[in-house]
Image (cartoon, rainbow, N blue to C red; front, side):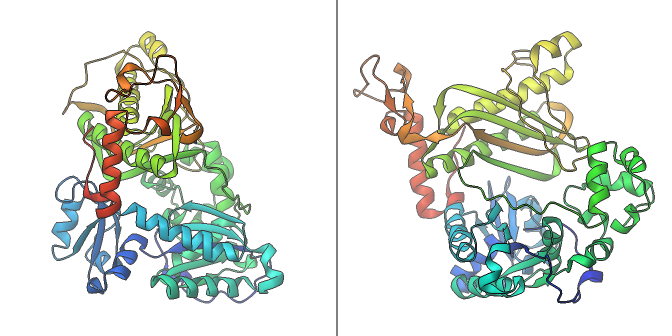
Length: 471
């Protein structure tokens, strides 16, 4: 689902010249809420709000139906605020298992029957390169219409399709075709089309960057063209950000669609409308995300060796930290404490003296504008600097806007050898000393692992939001 603002100025027919327009962006409309309405006909036409976390107090909106958006409800809004705006709405927990199942049928079934050049960027959207399918289909517009018709017929939900010569234009086209529309932007009209959009429509331009540009008199994408590259670099305080904006303002963007084959990482990250300012707030989010990541690992039969933490602050700077584990795992009870310790080490480094910082922290990859971020995780140890200084409710020396927990160095659980310790044993079936077994073979022997798998069973029956792990 797109967060970008739309413009009535581009809501028109841009012509039928499909030359060079072989990139489609297929985006489901209010995916989670639409699927819930499709399987619950009694909710038809009602405002539906799907959220994660505590449904009464600490939850966050994942998706709001278009009926709910009329009340001002939107993604990433606290459930408490959503209930104030829309007290008569239908509030439902996130059912990741169901949504992922439908997603696989749409992108791995319907779309894949057209081409294998699919770059799925989330559970509800993907870029599709149809250049190799035109001999059979003849037209990218025809392909887009067929995909939309198949999604509606088979799953009783709608999707929007943008068609362009590159991924940037295709994405903006689908956003402005919503809901339930298709928009083709001819290659020759890229600059004209994108010039009518506000600067906030460009993916990656957050509030801070938009405000810096407004101080230079920049309100629309067209206004960006009046600035030289040097002026852009000074405005956004980043040469890389200036490069990206300079090209984007002219309708230029990447055209390569990269299919994702072998899964290399699993991550969850969310941007919060209200900045997190205490240790308790951030660590609660870390725990919930670790639980979600671990559940995904188990559902795919994978284990990880590296845990990563990503943070974005109120000034849109990014920082990442990661740590390699001694033993592979698929348990939130292992992932969450590591991610929290990375956060506490970083927090300590922000308040420590120069010598302590050098000893306590590794290098942090940052993107100071939030544009075209390419930060990579750096492997660091967990510092003991400041240990015990940060307790629940303690104000942090910074405000956090985004929290992300990820895992990488993935292997199949069935193929991963594990040397269990005495603490992994759950009863009288301890493996003999020195005898290694696979992660899958350890199932049921680890008390924590058994508990988390029991929760998996509950969620598969009653939905992902039905129960949470207390970490």
